[in-house]
Every structure is written in structure tokens, then in C-alpha cells.
Length: 278
Image 1 (cartoon, rainbow, N blue to C red):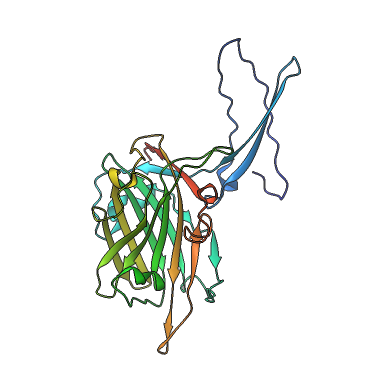
Image 2: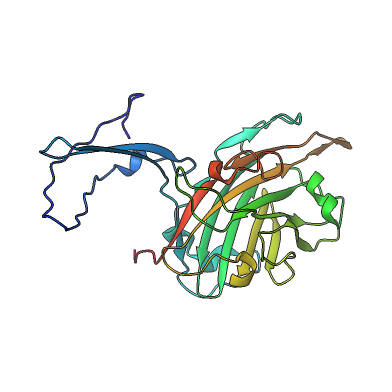
């Protein structure tokens, strides 16, 4: 967390009475934080007797805040109060399948996520100046859509991963209907997303994706403050110019995608918070 390329060392003296606990806080300037990534932080503790403890942990700064009011899934994010939320940027471009992104109008996006006692919500604003939908089934993954992986737990370095995660493709189909195709779930989880709500609206310069899961569809994640989840999200994009289809390309958050690089320890972690009044 420094303006240069070198890691910054933060130091503080501390005093803890025997058999007591204490919290030591190191403030970090928000300008140094990249919400699209996570950081490996090393902590060294040394006491007067010479005992030293070292711990390394991955830390991110992504909150899934509690919704400010009731949200209707209709492709209109005005009831999200976006001016009070911080968008999560997509961290990198994927070109291996052949499509190179020309500029922000070709493909760019930002993610929002909130929760309430009943639902976990996601909203994605996408800029895409060439819209392609050719299928009404799972084959829609070959055109404009979102590939989505959700690991309904947090994770710390050294921990054994739980088995499985939720894997889906979601978006607008050829017939104009927005659908979620769930193709994987955790053990004990529901194998389809029929009870999820989704709306995808075309705009002049792209799409607005809005969808929500009732708590049972993200089992065992509990919709309460302090719960954590990790996600991998990939906006897939295909263009059509002069009647010819381009190869697939995309932008992503976390890992590569949940099909090829199914490693939730590389995905991005979110924590459910009550948020702050602003």
C-alpha cells in the first residue's frame, strides 16, 4: 500500500495485559486499494521476551453491503442507490479465444452486489456496442452472457477448500427472455436456479444485468452480517460486424473462469456488511 513499487512496512508498538486480547489497527489510504484484486499481507509480532510470530494472509477490501431499501428485479438499478455503493471493476481482459477488445465501448463493465434478509443481489452494467444472442438454451454461453461461479464460503490461506461451488451461465436469450442456467452446485445445494430472479435490459451502449438468489439457492451461505463468499465472474462477448461473427472474448473478476480454472482460492472474496449511512 504505497505509491511506488516497493511494499510499505507499517509498525506500531502495542501493550496487552496477560490473558487479554487487543486490536491493533493499521489504517490504509483508500487511494492505494484496488478492489479488483487481493493482497498478501505479512504480519510480524514481537514481544519484549524475544518471542516472534509471523503470519501471512490474503486480504481484500470488497463489501457486499446491505440494501438501502426494497429492490425490484426489473433491469433498472435506480432502487440500488448506486451513488452510495462502490463498483467493483473487472480486473483483466481475456483474449485467448481470439477476440481482442478494442476499447471501453467494445466491452467494459462494473459489478455491484448487495443483500437483505431474503436475497443476495447482483447488478452488472456492461458496455457492449455489438449485441449477439442466437440461442434459448445453455448454448447461449457462446454469445453475450455472464459466466458465474459462486463459492458460498470464505477462505484463509492454508485452509482446505470445501467441495464444489455454484456454476452458471446467465443472460439474455434469442427470444428476449433472460435466463439462468445452473450447471453445477455444492453438495446439498439446489441443482437449478428456477427460483432465482433475473432481468437483463438492453441499453443504447450495452446491457444492464440484475439478478437475485433466495438464501436457499446459495446454501450454505447465510444472509447475515459477517458471512463471506468468493466469486469468479466472466463477461463473455461476441460481436457481429458486416454479417460476420467474431471469436469470443471477455473480461473477468477472479481466477480465469470456473470451468477452466476451478480454484476458488484464486477467486475474489466478499463480506456481507450492514454498510454505512452516507
